[in-house]
Length: 480
Image 1 (cartoon, helix red, strand yellow):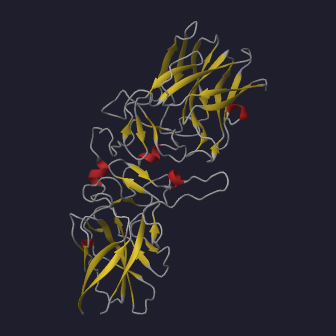
Image 2 (cartoon, helix red, strand yellow):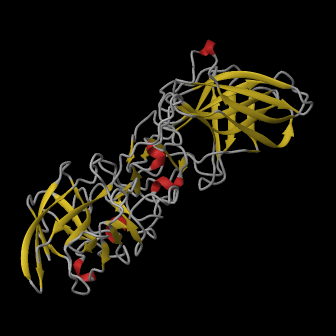
Image 3 (cartoon, one colour):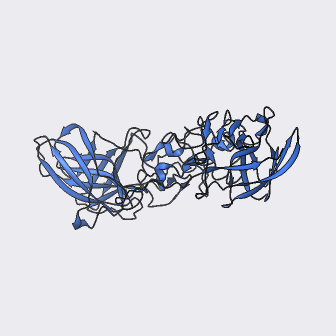
């Protein structure tokens, strides 16, 4: 059996599975396909190198929705090795000459960017989304200080942060400061100190970007303590929406706090060891090198692109942009993606139809046709009598159903039929499976995953959008 596209400029993937039934259209049961049927590999298998998105749990741009940009560690961008977030475990040192006498600051950076590396508070993807209201840094060794400085930055800022300092005698001190935006060009002043400018970010849809000043800036903000004779035990931080600050639960913004420094004289600040990081926001230097569309190319071999697929739904054999991945590839949401290799599924909207996935997604695992691949053949392992066939597949780069000519050959003769294959972003017609996620092989990045789309409003609560890859069922009725 061969399939031919009506419009060769379109992309289409067919034959991940077939089903058959008698003339009465009873349950469609899976038909094993010979591996020779598969001419391309459009699926990133679960065992492929992890997605870039698995290396963080939040981003300054959109919180736990993990969209937009975030920091990468110095050394990640091999073409611009001095850009990025300060290296893990190093001392970040800076002076503030705007103060008299000049203040000096030294912060110990988080020990490991593979683990939680910040206290994160604030909104998720936009205003009116759920809040991470608070976080706490607990001093490893309680000690007295005249002042404490907080290393921080905000996305969609400035953001008002409330702090509560806890003392060993059970007393507390409460106040606020304005956490400056991480894209701010503000200079050091008497109220805060500009500690670092990453001058480069990485997008969670793939790609290094913003290699210029005022992108990924860190700030030190000081808290003058009411007593310097009692040990400080911990500091609570709250996303503050007091009416006097003009903030509300329907606002926006989020803050990441990376560490503390203490001072006995309010002038010289040295690192304070503390615990309590609740999120990961920095891609480590050894994270997957994400090229991405329009990004700055990094050196090294693009392993995922060269080895783990040969075809994408967006660009065919050029392997650009987006395609499918197997369940388990995106560890943060292991149920997103195509059904696991070898599994048998039931159509989500047509429960009489069942499909069995290819036995492996390593190597060719689909019959694909495109402008450069005008036809493909689906070969049964065993000749099978059928009154009807159902195809498990999708079309790409079209947006409307694709009409595909199907030439069917059998012991009783041959015939020609047409099937209509829906686009993988079609959200209105019945579907067989929704993957809730796509992968960019050249960017080691995923998108349209539940965490990136989940945006329940405070009132009412909406489920996440189903704007994701889907596969459709098309039938060809046989007359022989």
